[in-house]
Length: 125
Image (cartoon, rainbow, N blue to C red; front, side, top):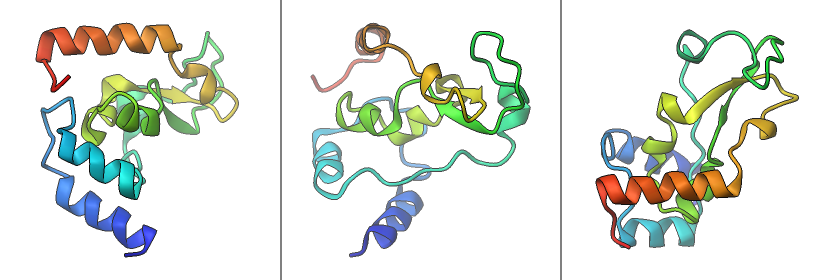
């Protein structure tokens, strides 16, 4: 299966599968480790939810993209987070192209957030 076919197949099959789950099952994680994390795009209308301006320290430039506060691939492979959880509005921030990576949380902040999630929703670990 080609990489593009894999991305499309996973996106179609999992679109509604993880609507409330936060953490992947061990078998799901193994698939992502083997085949890679599928590419996901923020749906249209993100500016309505996140705003039209970059949110990095008052930058104020027009927002070009939605940045993940927890890097998408790391969230799946390192922290066992479901793709749907990472695509929730609270995990995204409006960004200009200059500040996409700057809006990412620090490693310590991510770990604190993950620990809190594990305490509140539980996980396989």
